Image (cartoon, rainbow, N blue to C red; front, side):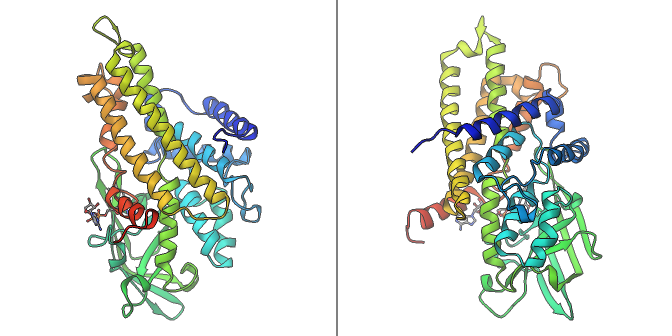
Length: 390
Ligand SMILES: Cc1cc2nc3c(=O)[nH]c(=O)nc-3n(C[C@H](O)[C@H](O)[C@H](O)COP(=O)(O)OP(=O)(O)OC[C@H]3O[C@@H](n4cnc5c(N)ncnc54)[C@H](O)[C@@H]3O)c2cc1C
């Protein structure tokens, strides 16, 4: 087996990297601001999408009939990786979660309507799975959808609906049959967020990242917006979660954080020599570098499976768990190496890496939860990967 990227893949990666180096502001502050959740980040991303479309770099691996470029899945991975390294990942949820799931399970009308819009970056999505009493045990969800004429009427409450305040549609899980075992009565919907009856309340996390509580009060959704077949939503959500675990987390940002930490170690003097000359720092950074290579291989494996039309399942959980826990180890290392300077936030004089270390340390708490907790990932790996009993 050859673990190296092919010539064509390396050429594509370099072309992307050169383009992004030219187009994306380089200082750390603007990259932190460039995050998808901030106002300025949003405006930048909207303009940036136009440039990506000009380059034919949206929906890299999708079929041409749905507005894609039909390139190998590995190129899609390289694309997502490079973009997230530069902290610009426009249309990410649509492109990597909703789109691929619709390609597999959507009705022809849904594919024709939504996929070209997603490919052109014209539509954004939030994910409406979690409820106050249904997180890890998602099949217990209580939000219900009742058929009324040509519509479904949705009532309930969701929590942690990230991006609900700025998305065009919600990829929503709701119960469509109360009488069958819980995972057999769920359907997925594409709900226009402007529909009357939806209200959104902010929920601010430790790193300042905004997620939301959403309330659904007699929200009428046309029957054509029920994804695929009725009561098959559990299976669609499971596939979408696998796609999310591979693609939604911006792994390239970890490489960026690592590179910045190395830069910090080389440029910061402690005890009369750069941090990078201290044996304990060198060992720590070398271990992180090895872990990052392992993380990349797990990502390449998942992309390789997608390229063969297989949906990675426990393989997606391996990547998600390893990468998000690596993220915490990386942030911990940054905080310990920078010492008290790491505690200082952006704007404080002497803040290590302009507050990047402080910010990433707080941010790293969330990803081991969002998209499914590490414990759940371990259960999946044990049962489906290793065949261990429940
Ligand atoms: C910042 C943030 C953003 C998010 N964004 C979204 C979003 O956009 N859309 C969305 O739908 N959801 C989102 N989530 C929700 C996320 O997917 C859930 O938090 C996650 O699935 C866990 O559910 P829970 O919070 O209810 O915790 P619980 O399920 O109550 O879990 C509590 C603890 O118990 C453990 N546990 C539970 N069951 C088991 C088990 N069977 N075996 C072992 N341990 C177990 C868990 O690992 C965890 O440590 C987000 C969460 C956060 C924090």
